[in-house]
Length: 408
Ligand code: UTP
Image 1 (cartoon, rainbow, N blue to C red):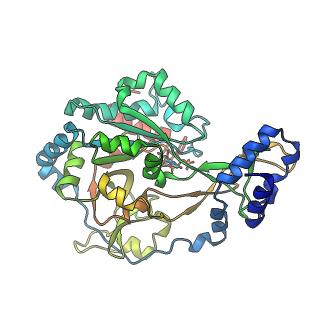
Image 2: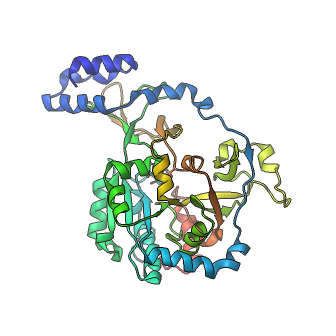
Image 3: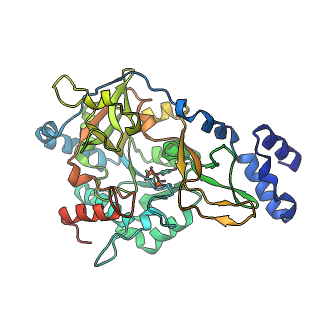
């Protein structure tokens, strides 16, 4: 793209300020900026104006959940089915590690964070160790696909290499990168991060399968015979990954996706709750939870929206392939975005100062025909690290690790 074309594109989207420093740049820097302008989808920036009405909700109704008692009854049967699938190489795991972890406030990728007290216990290490439990049980390696972003790819890969993959078989670990999206101020004007670079942010965790396709990883996975993908977040240090019983239950019930859920600890807890939306499986986010929904009861007389998702899903690959071309809703999320101030000096804000634009994995559930919400014991499998202290923090996760006999 040449300067004139870039000018025209920016003018169309009201973003001409991006060229403010153009004349000061070296030839090479100018090229970098022009390429970024060419590759950026500026149309998303207009969404911040209608962010309240962006994703209207359909009719919300309760969904059936496979609860602990039922799972306990069929544990042996499901575990056997799950282990067979794992042994046959049909199950892969996808670690979503492209996020910025801004709430934790560390510049490094979240998985590099050390939660150890008497020894090193890195978040990545905890996850790999959890997966290794199943590898040993099944006596088979499980392919692990790790999604990173432009912001943390090199550090993540180097960290795994330096730590010798925490005992995992490197032949079964594949890294791929997600796409980036522009990040803007509250008026939808893209921020500049450097004089020749617009501020960008990873485009949410919803594009993971599309990124696997783009990177050729989906092809490789298909050839390896993987039929199910257990997608999980980087920050839950207690979660079971490729959990044989969960895998077996999802297969046995012929579900397009299984979703691990936990009993919410309060009706207004900040987790998305499983539901039906216009008759299809879906997740109602905590900020869409009305008082009416919080008070609603199901046919058993129990709270109707009592089970929250923990970002641990088992997707059937053939169903993913059918939905991959569909556009997921975009969410406008308030974040802290590093930028250049009026004087052209870099600023790292302490408070949110604008928007990033994200697609979310939870919206994929609504695209699928069937979903098995599968309950797990909260204190055994849910220790998310979002913040340094307080709720869902390093502190609370350490307590939960202790409760589960994990030495830190
Ligand atoms: P979060 O919603 O906690 O976002 O991600 P975050 O960016 O990591 O953290 P904050 O909000 O800035 O503090 C949930 C999971 O989705 C992944 C994260 O790495 C985490 O595993 N994720 C999130 C991505 O892989 N890509 C993204 O663009 C966003």
